[in-house]
Image (tube, rainbow, N blue to C red; front, side, top):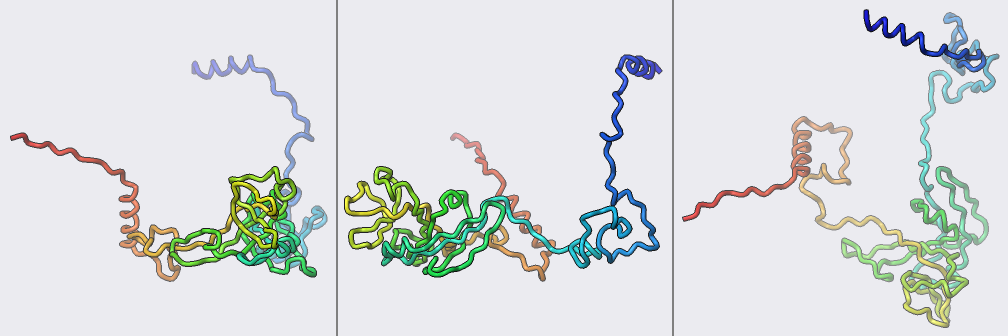
Length: 276
């Protein structure tokens, strides 16, 4: 009773609520608030309510997505950098200066979208290759790819075999037209006086060598190291469950036990020693 009296007294001191104009209040959607006759409603026709056809301007055509209780499978491009299609300049070693400068780069798609390419003439005599997109590529649209053996540029692989790599070269780097921009800590694509291409670094830029581009990065293939598997295949990132063979209770318990042991911190136990 005392609490009720306190609330009434407090309410008397509070200001009265301001009137809200009718136009400022929320108005439900015409399609949702429109009443229809359930006897004449046809769910196979487009829209939520066929009787609201005259009230809605964006009526879906027959057979479109969202009509007849049918919804088209859809997916959205990630907001990150889109996959890139890069022109291939040629194969290294043996690549020439003319081959490196020949391809006309195709534009990269803005993040979250895609673009279309129409092949014309000798725009890319070496062909194309699709690689994962990155912000680094987005900032260097005049990038071409050089197919190289790993050993030719000093790259070794976990399986001790030879594999091809993609050397991504920015042909618009500042050092290509201003030798003072040369960075001795970076890798470049050079052309010697005979026009032969070299991918390497230099402490000092040779006077008779030209800079054709700067190496952005080298795209490596995935190579698994022999014998790199762990004790439990289920804990490996490459393990795939077979949909037709569901896990048993014993299998799940084994996975849970192995995961718990892997996460368990190690501790040292000190045992008392008897002095004689």
